[in-house]
Each structure stands twice: as structure tokens, then as C-alpha cells.
Length: 548
Image (tube, rainbow, N blue to C red):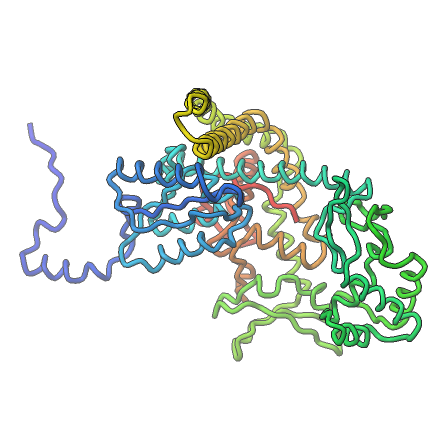
């Protein structure tokens, strides 16, 4: 019986020919990059409030991250964070310093070690985007308390889900905070930043806003406007001579702010005015007289035609040179066009045609009403899978909480027996209490994941059903936000082919497009972007929905 042997395709070559092939290997294409195999790392720690800058949180994060690195034989190349930085967005000094270090480091960084994934970021979509960018460079995020292998498809998906719920948790906290703020405003209590001219003081245990010396000068400005008919600029100059410097724009804002006549106006009040409990700077009659004068002299601001007619400017790039398109108008015909900003490129397109084409693209990503319920069930199933792992972690967290209780009891016993001083007692009591607060927060997040998958899924479904209509009906600023959320690096325009997608896109809408194509048994692809199935391999993971 003959053996079937796999022959080496290069076995017939002599040594000289083999050497020649080896020399030319540097020009070969398609070699697969092996990621996540390095043993170098950086450690990033962060606390969510200034009151936590010292004590348990940072010390524990650093220690456990170091232990994790030692256990996995990682070489630590640097430490970042170690202070208060909000994770609601990614404009953070230490966070950006870490990313710059990774980019410029002579030694290749393979892992970023964090205590929990929400220590890395709580910004949802942007956190996932940054993680994907790092992944393309062979850099993976490792969580000490959530040991998920981000180099696998399932692990990457789980990390995305954790980041979604961190973002969702932020949204819920914000809603609760806003509800309390609105209630206070309805009672006439100002909760925002104290306006110029006021001080916050405590009188008989009650916090009040009272007019200070700057306020008395501003009061004079209101009367200068009425009695001397001075312009805002003249009032500003006179105030500057008296020691109060105010910009021209702020001067106009002050004259139009009803707070100074005892009324509260705030976005949370949804167009209502409430009588405030703070001290009035001027009477309502004086305020109205000043604004009547302002209205006679004001020309106001209007949205420019450019904003209305070319919302895709800069967002859409020229496929020939990569330069963002700008807008211009042919005045004789009153027609708007997009054109490449690079001189001599000669790429242009009627604005209406390009806007209509983009709206068609959004339609391809829009969830159809008949598929909404099924899509919601699929999303809930994915969220529930993630919640199972989180519930397992809750057992360890509860055990840790009980252990800290025992430490507190022992600490109190030592203090009563005069084994430690009062300073040491208070120091370690605060440390243990902070540990328990952190555990409670983690347990609340686990409960959130387990109890709100339907709400989170519904949030995504509601938004995905109205993409095209939302973009068409919103103003210039909201259009920009929506289109950049779906395509983070914009789109390219090819004069011959029309709009073509770049490498970056929001995977949740692509996932919806694929699922709908499967349900309809249609050939996969996005015709409006000239993309076939091979170009539309969806990334693993679901990103949170964006609210314009």
C-alpha cells in the first residue's frame, strides 16, 4: 500500500534557486499577522471621582494589575493614570499619554492591563472604536477582574458588551441626576454654575445666591442701557474701567439672561420659566426695557445656506486624493455643489444628488419594522449570554464584601483595646468603606446587565428603525453627529462609482443589514455603496446607539 505524501512545492529547486526566493520574500503580500503573542504591557489605573484620588481604589488597582502581569510573565513598560479622570469621554490627559507612549515606544506593547474594563473607558461606541484600532496594531486590553481573551471573536464580543453596559450605566445615572436637578429647578432652586455677579452663601443652614460686588456693577450696566442708551460695547468698556472685565459676547448674554430679574430658564424646564428663590439683580420691568433696546439694535444670527445645503462637507472625501469635499454655490442658478478642495482635482457633485445618495445609504442600514421584534430577541439573547458570566463574578464580590466586614469589626476591636491610634483607625476605616462602595458599584452593574437587556435592546431597535428619516429631519449639527457616528472616518466619493465606504463603520448597523439580508434571502452587500459580500464582513460586537 502506497503512502500519500505531501510534497514540498519547492523541493525540486536547488540551493541557489531557494536562496533567490528567500531574498524576494520581503516583497510578498498577504502574510497573516500574528497578534497578541507579545509579553509586554502597560498598566492603566483610574478612579471616577476626585475624592478617591488617594486610598483604596488606585492602590488596589495598581497592585492587582502588577500581580496579573507577574502571573502572566508580562514585562511592564510603563504606568499611566493613577489619578482622577472621567471616563465619560476619551479626552483624558493620562489616557492620551498612554496611547502616545504605545504609538512611539521602541519596544512593541502587546497588552494594556486594567483592573476592570470600565476603568479603560465608559464612552461606549468610542471605547469600542479605540479598542478596535489597538487590536489592528496587535494590542489587546486585559482586565484583571474580567479575564476575557480579547484576541478571540467571542472574547472581543464580550468586551464590547461590557463597554456597552458601562455606557448604558452612565446614561441611567445621568437620567437620575437630571431628574433631581429638574425637580430642584421647578422649586426655584438654581443648581447649575453660579452666574457672574452672584455668590453662594450659607445663611442659617440654608444655601442662598446673593448679589456680590461684581453684581452691583452689572446692575449699573442695566441702568446705563436704559438711562444713557449706551451700547453693549460701551457698557463693557465702562465696566472694564471700574475693574470688571467682560467680553462683548458675554455682555450681550448677561442682558438677555432672565436670571438677573429673578426668573430661572433652563433646558431641563423644557421652555418654561420658573420664579427663582435667589436675590434679584434688577426688576422685571428694567430687564424687559433693556431687552426691548437690545432687540431694536440686534441683527441676530441665522443658519447659513451652506450648512443647510452641504451637510456632508469634510465628512465625504475625494477618493482620488483623500481630501475632504467642501461646498460652493453657483449664484446665477442658486445651485449648491460639493467639490474637492485640492487645486486641480476637478471632482465635484451636485449637493442634492450626493445628499440623496447618502440618504439611500442610510436606508440600507435601517431596520425594517417587520424585523424589529426578531432583532430585539437576538440582541437580548446576546446580552443574556454576557450576563451569565457577570453573575458568576457576583459570588466572589459578595464573599469579598463579607471579608471586609470582618476586617472592619477587627479594626474596631483593636481601636477599643487601644492597640491603634484614632488616626490609624479612621484611615483604615475609610479605606475599607471605600472598598465596599466599589464592590457595591460592581454588584449594581451586574444587576443592571441581568435586569435591563430588554431596555438596552429596545434602545438600539428604536434608533435603528429611523436612521434615514432622522438624518433628513434634523439640523446641520445633528446631521454631522449622526453621519460621523455611523461612519467614524467618513465616506469617499468616486466620480465614476459614486459613494464608496471607508474601512471604519458602526458594526451594529452593518449587523442589522446582514441579518435582514439573511431573513430576506437576498444576496449580501450594500448596492448603494457598491460593496459586495466580501467587503462587508461585520465586526464582532454590538455598539451602543447614539443619541443626537
